[in-house]
Amino acid sequence: MKEDDLLRTVVEWCRYRHILTFHARPARTAQGWRTPVMGDGAGFPDLVMVGVNGTLYRELKANDGRLTPSQKVWMERLAIAGEDCGIWRPRDLGQGTIKAALDRISSKDLENRP
Image 1 (cartoon, helix red, strand yellow):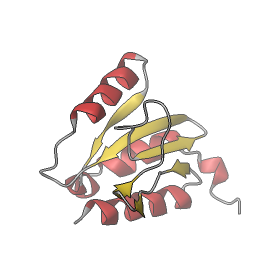
Image 2 (spheres, helix red, strand yellow):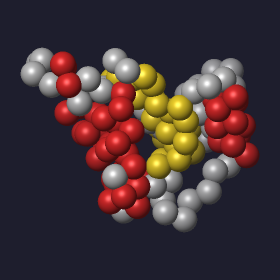
Image 3 (cartoon, helix red, strand yellow):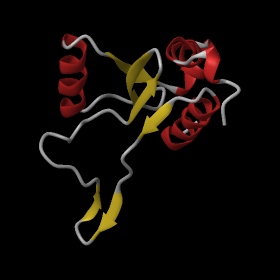
């Protein structure tokens, strides 16, 4: 499974649980692929998910993917700040890790809302 497939799956699961998501997609420019950010945005986690019971910051990687130096800095700072951050890989789908984290921040009270 590719990272884009993992991203689509997680976003779909979030929608089902009424969890808000944010992902900045890169765009092709004359200089190549770029993600428009300002400040220290390079390395910011791929996906931010906000539920009524918390926020998750996750970098999505292939099963053998590695963090870049700037991604490591973001993960370290978020962890020091007490945020729930980490890496999700395709294998986490089958192990139930992703479902458990999403269930933790979602609310059953929202399941019947549009």
